[in-house]
Length: 85
Image (tube, rainbow, N blue to C red; front, side, top):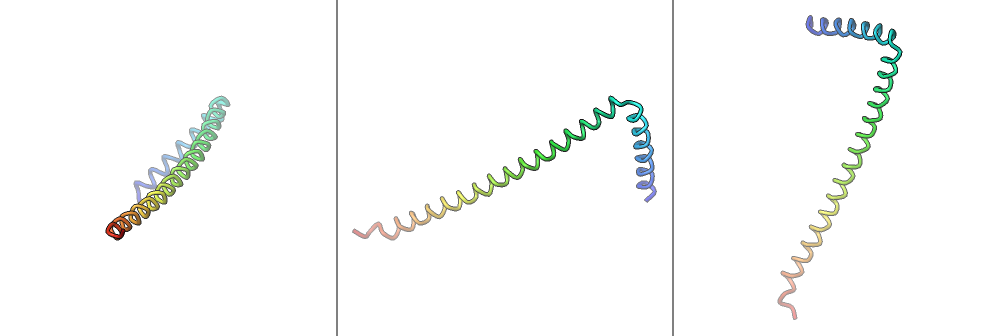
């Protein structure tokens, strides 16, 4: 527990120092704000890409299952009807 408390205390000190530095440098604040916006957009884009990839995998699974079923029907037909003429 002491370690966690120490880490939290140090983080608070760092955040305070960063706030002081950023408030003293408007250009720095603008860059930080722009970085936060870019990061948010990147996260949203990544989530959308993962959603599209998941849909591709799902569709590929359905196609594979369909092809497997068709091949099994053809194999069944060939095995059971090859002597019927």
